[in-house]
Image 1: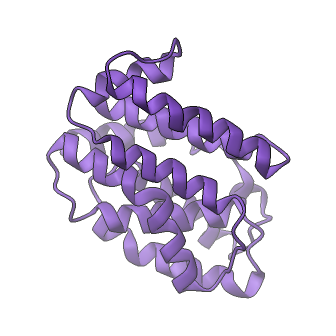
Image 2: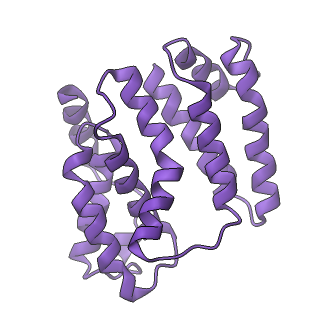
Image 3: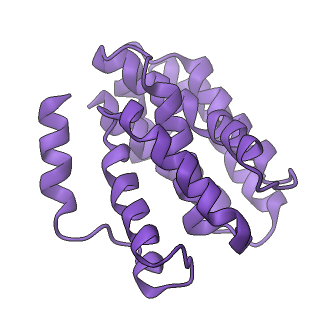
Length: 200
């Protein structure tokens, strides 16, 4: 349940920034979640299913500071200029996603050895799938993500990232290709996720 709460909370943070046309509105939504952390970690969450689920996760030992850092990073990223060189994107991925994967590692007892790699992998994959990456930078970012993949094993999003990265490669690094633009990971994703969960 703790991991479910973490991923559900992350989904809310991502939606808060991606479903708005103005950064100020997105930041207001993120501020709501930032303020809600006090009640969540005090055992008195707002009447919201994800807040209630995260409160259960908090009792498993998730640190409030990790969730606050993730919200702050996403709020800052909404107004920061985006650079598509590999080092900048890896740093961005770490800021946005490392708090999540460290928290997952903590509650599952995995240790944090793969958390940073998982953050880089997921962040780069998300950039390739949702950002206007210049064509001459796609292969480099894809290569950096693939390099992080073996070190991110054990984190369930690594399964999805692997699927999306294969699609990009098969499409000749054309991010506009229909197979790359597909939102769903495909029919084989569920058994792959199940197997990865069993192994981890």
